[in-house]
Image (tube, rainbow, N blue to C red; front, side):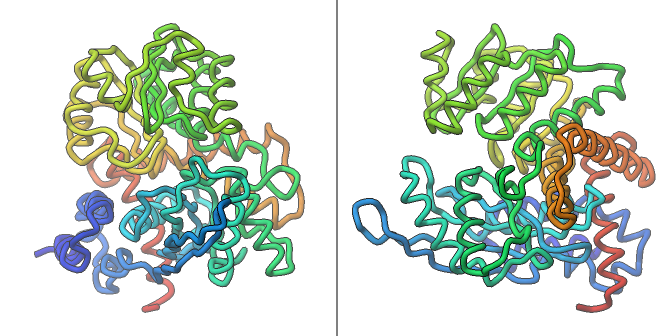
Length: 451
């Protein structure tokens, strides 16, 4: 039995209930068999066995007091997975679905995503099962402060630099950073996604969405295509989806879908810039539901369904799909519907939004498919640029950061294609992304010896 299969079997045996983590590990390892054959030094040094085990996984209780004076208790997590090429780096997610399994899967993906950016960042992830929806500013602040009372001892600008993720936007980052600064008595770049007034970077809020569209544009160029006059399906309505819509509009495409956890809206006339601004105000300021968009613009709203279910059931034509909501949102049936309805390109703005069956269907039908660790790496890349600006004690212009982001996304695209070509699978972005990210981390781990 090959070392790759042995390691996959070990993960299944050691973590039998961690299905998303298993899925992430298997998706990476099953493409690395050629690497094991070409690099026996990686096998001898136990790199494959070591890379699937986090350096440490921290779980802690988070007690806080709600507006009624009742004590609430949530679970907090931080998984510091691999720091071979730089400090642990990865977001904090606040969502009821958060558990150790979810944080491990996200942290594992983050290792290779960060490696692809070419910036010196390791992989980690954190979060809590706290649900910020419906919470007042005071409740959210008290929770964030309670969360940071434990997390602060495990992070630092040269140790572990968290960022935002689902449920953790500018408000939450402000509360987290403010409390860290207070209890550590220092102002350092220990969190990214900060406000511009206290060390944040221009373009950081836009970066994941912009980067996903930049990556999709690079894939389309390989077929002499672009976004002009293309129908685009976007899922989600948070930070990533909002700015993916904005960038698609700039590139001449027409976005016709948006959703949240309650409903999907289909707007055949297109979600233009004015409508996109309404979504940003609705979600970021008023924290409302996407059904309010349908009420305002008199569009069709499908309650209790995600974008991909609606596309399948209604037979909606789309040229480009940008899943920007959450993991495993596109199943095999949905993927087949995208193929049948004319989709030519899928770029993942979310982490692992496509099931293994969906990915097989994309590839069997030769869709341009950009996996999340490559396509959505623009967010963490710009977090890395924020870290650089914090270290230099200066701020770059919007144009400079955006240009650096575009260069990084083009570099990631080229790295994926080059690695796929070198290992005999030209055009396979999944294999290319996994190999390019893994080999960089593996070489660093090899250099350090057994640690």
